[in-house]
Image (cartoon, rainbow, N blue to C red; front, side):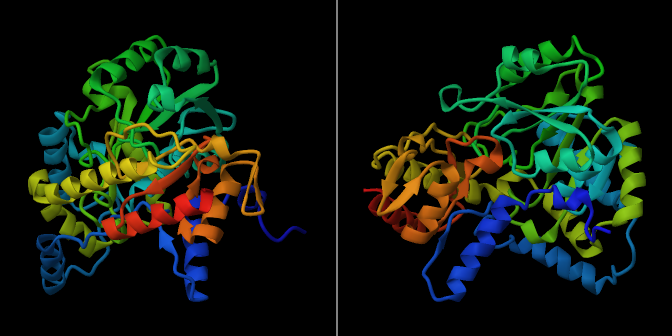
Length: 394
């Protein structure tokens, strides 16, 4: 009898986590690796949030929390949705989970049946596809290009829809491309979706505040899409709280209740101390973390300037998040320092071995022509890393 399930044997390992593990392994061997692979802010969690967590410990928050989150945290989330997104939710529409990733897993678990199709505009966040497949759904990839700023067009969406289409998942600002859908672009997609009332949308807005052009738009902001959209968000990126593991959704009540039911059988409520700290984080205006966004924008401009000086790197201008997603297909079929480069995976591994710089292959995001470079690193590290990359491909 087979020891492990087909489910786990058929699942991919997270490429971002695998590259980070490989980088740590090489550092352990004494090699000077610069990590530009993880999507993790290099800032410390702001002191006002840490102080709230310390106070929660002194206040003896140490018991199981409600499965869907503390009532006052849900109220803070409701206030945040209204303040930042002009979205109206009730407590029964909010579910707090152990990170936005669990939110996505919950949604797939309660909504997908075998062979239900989920449209994924490429590039997409690395775990979307496997979360869908784990729940017996079928990912339907819609390829975009750097020339359209990695955004799906209404025509592409229309062509991807079949009688089996159940959902569309997208992120804006996008991980890995940094692309941001404008309100007008989302409206154009919504105009397609209104013709198909049984299709639901997951709008992943975890990078909402890391936006260099302002004017963040939410699909749920359209009256005719509100009842068909699950908005996913959290505190990992904008508040530099990746390890605190708090994400949340605003959703139609029936879906939220189902997520609560599923979560009750898997993890129950999220960490009680982290929840108390998030109340403080969300009740403060986003301007409290603007210093991080300003720094990320400076780093973005620096990365683009340096990459544009390397032959064969084709970049767009990302309007949000903290990634660039250059097309590196120029190098495919070439041999660099004795190493044949056939695809983005070869190129990413070559940069790790030759330049000692960790990136992530675009294959993991559904785009085989690109690599993802995170600029959630110091300017000094960025300058040195891209200098090494330039030398490695010269």
